[in-house]
Length: 426
Image 1 (cartoon, rainbow, N blue to C red):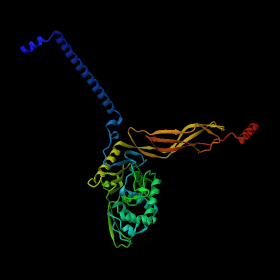
Image 2: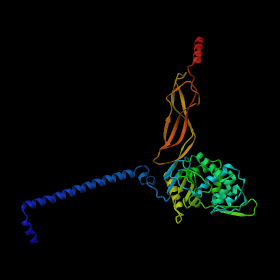
Image 3: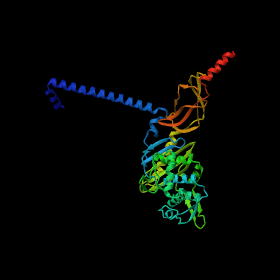
Image 4: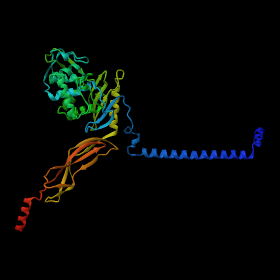
């Protein structure tokens, strides 16, 4: 203690004052920094609390999070409207393996009758595994082969169907591509009916997750054979024989999703060396129709990844989206003025059908009208003069025509003659 005091006495008075002021400055700065940190913490806490109290607590829901998926490309689609609710690389062209067979099935159902007989060619009988094991010249009913195609994903069956429906694999592929264009697919190209890795002068056998979901939506909601498609793909076991009755075959459904979740409707698996594991499936629950498509979802050793991704996306859809219905009906909108007409204006009516779509709690349907302010007579009753669009985000979910509620005669020569006679009669 004496040593410390002795040293203190030896320090010049001015230097001691400077050191005291320096310590005071440091203490003051520490207090100011502490005050700023407390203020910043309070602001951050207030912001977090405010966001937390937003309707639906959006910041903490999966709607604002990046879902962790194994698939390289994935889509969750609203089966009612066709709107993509969640996507990952949705338009990247990739091989799709045996998910191809949903198109093979629906084309065969729409092009033929179920009692059509199919004869196995040598080309069909020599397809690689997985295969039914048909023999060259063996005959089957098409309705039986469709179960072989969709439940067991037999490659020989796919070729047999294609050759008997269209005459050749190439001609059948043309039908598949034409149907894809009709459905609205933007980047899909079929070469084979079974989905094995193929390439020709036009490109590789491929689709996108967006297109694949769109094809399944067509198969289960829009095709005239939707009921038959759902019956086939939802069957657990099926046994049949060839037409001669000599050989019996048994098929088991490999779509495990059917037993994974309540409401599972349909689906198709796929795998090739280039495509990896692929899947497309649909679920209907509480009036919500959800479709999931997955491409490049792992390779051998990761067979279960497609099921994990499917459940993740389906759960997300069920948690985040509710059904909204734009009910059908007629709505009178602002009348349009009529130029050179016997009436100064005409009533306009918008009429639309029912539209079912899924919405998040933070989403709204925006109504946009495109109608003329002035029409020139004569105006015909029921004439289409404009359009009303219903939009969610960037997607138009419904477009309805605007029509005239009545006709309006123009002030032409004969109108003048009629008016003159009326005045004379008065």
